[in-house]
Length: 427
Image 1 (cartoon, rainbow, N blue to C red):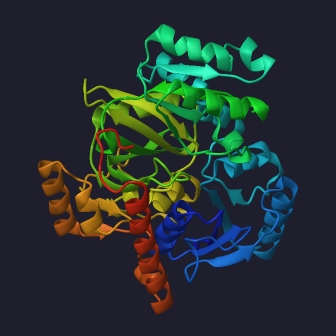
Image 2 (cartoon, rainbow, N blue to C red; image 1 turned 30 degrees about the vertical axis):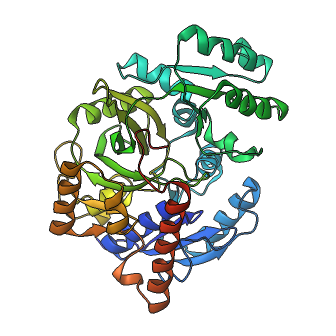
């Protein structure tokens, strides 16, 4: 039977969307497009995907109307809708029943989104399936939040002392979608709070803005960023976990707006963490792509899970580069007629040690003070090269190559400005 052509539409155009569109094009040769309010950094000079300009991307009604129009323009195609933005994932989940049924969506539904995207709910679910999470103080700014168990900003300062939590602490939003909407002086993706005065200042800003969800104060699990881990999973519409992939973070980005996002990963197996993620996704009734962040304590060696992002994650190309194409994982679930090769028994688990990096090797090397780790990473690089999501042979015009090289140079400059040398904490 002849299959219909496929068109994949990515919303937002971040590096994670580019990586997924690349995977779809690389594996299947599918038509790929990207829709965004402005032409994004990672899509400029690219010939991979047609850019669809939608100035009202932040308006759910306008977005839904545009998706209807795109579907009508491709009457003979199978359609895949994809995004890597929390806000857009939630909008799609909220309005899934209003989307054309022709759209295949490898993302979770609204109920699962709310169960996992709140870091408070995430911790509660982790507790039920035996997964360790950081000691956390949820801080609320509304009577409803206080009634649900969140403490007031004043109570939070007292609770820090009562629990004997040592400074510095980590401060971060419980719901990323709400964090996207709020603005205040000194706002960061993740706050590294070194004093009670800093804690009080951030909480004061949020209180003044009637912040609608909880803000979390968490213990700092010891260890630099090479103790961080990334784990990417997929749970199919039939309720089967079909992908488990992970790796050791070697370096994170350090600009205020991107702090904590992996810039380099060495892929590897972690059966204990994979089993934990499998239990979590089953308990949550989750479907679609998910990306977990956890850390191996330098003091105890225990694995501490921080969050699960209800999307594939910006760094997803490490999965494709290490041997399991993420678009094929999606296709086996939603477009099975397009995949001719037999599926593996159980989850697909990449097992080829691969270096994923968006920073040049000489720069990355300086942030790996451990000689054994540096040698392991260098061996993987020599064996398989370094996988960079933006360096795609099918999207390699002279202008594109020059632009990506400029992005690399700019990123090096940002490290020199914000994180010139590695530290014991990664801050």
